[in-house]
Image 1: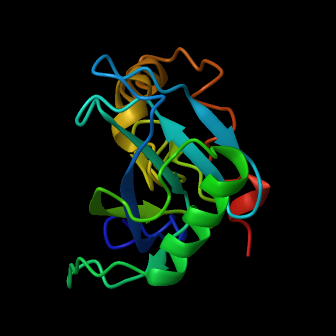
Image 2: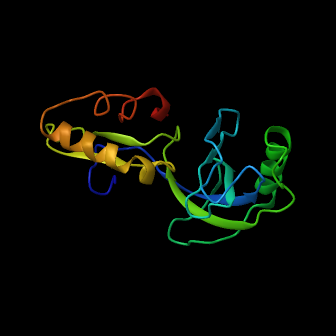
Length: 173
């Protein structure tokens, strides 16, 4: 983004995230596994799984840095072992022996792992950006679109000038 707007100096790093799907008696054909978010380090979460309803998706939100132009699908064994340990502690009914399915996602992560939605400095309020979804871009895309349209129409709501701004402390070097 800094190629287009010289006033933006927020590095975004490409990160590979392993997304394993696990077997559990708690999951059903209707995707009955609950939401879980654990703010340990690394942060863990599980979302209802619509793609594979008989499996549960439990993963940590941190991955390995990668080169965005050289996509790879390697799975980090240490990360899988950490997830297995997490399952054993918090979801003992899950079969944590081996994931039934593995996917690798690429995130564009900001320095504090939160998305950025803000006005471009020096553009007189006429240009906004939304980037660095940090794994939330697809889930929150409609909300970001609303914040962008509201901001450009002069309605500076909570999201447009809230926690996702370019000048927030978590992005300072």
